[in-house]
Image (cartoon, rainbow, N blue to C red):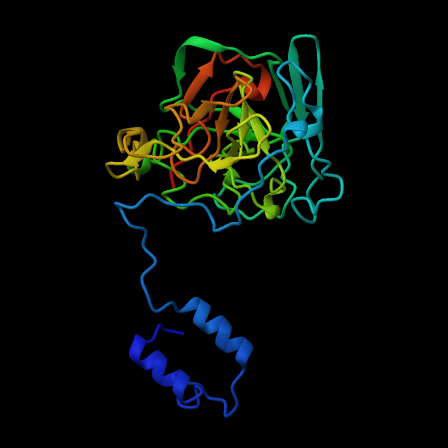
Length: 322
């Protein structure tokens, strides 16, 4: 059915569609479906307004007794996924394990999402073996490490899924190193599948559908520092909390080369994060915060990222040309 002009659409509604459909009775289910498929306003994203995450309730801040102390094995922050819906019929259920040595946190996963898989790229979804090793006692490095246009895994979630940077790869050329959030190629949890059929995130949303709704720690960067949700504690007892915000402003078009389209500017902003999208918490330790706008998870490594092996150490392969 062709889209009707707005005026005609309203006229059809006023007449209960008797003049627009070949039926003398109105099927309200069909009407709702027709309206959803025939919007009356454009849906093209703005080239000057930063994209935002799906509307959610404010995530909870952790109690001080829930926070793993620096150097404590954080196995308690990894949720039990055995009762989740999984990716869907025909897919393996998610499998994640976390343990520690005297110096490392070791997380293994089969790379399967714990919620219904919705394809956003031409790539299928398949089990991928992941194993990450990060410092149990991370420290701030003398200098930050850039992630500009860096492909591959930069961190992982507590649900066992890899986190990539806030850009895509060099292909297709028209979207080279573009912002995948801005370009609308992610699912509602902030992920999609890559050329190796691996599911990965470019942004994190603290919502129930993604099984991160109650997680105050959403994941870890490869330097070992945790990635919290956007809400954080101001004092050690967490009697006062705040929503922390990104310091990056959109100053160009992130359809391609997104790092050239955003500029860090903390001036005039309240509870703004640093250039790595993190801050020092009330306990004196560093942490990142996921935000609804660029760079979404972190903007650089505050600590020294550890070298990984296997899939976790592989660079992100280029997306195939359409």
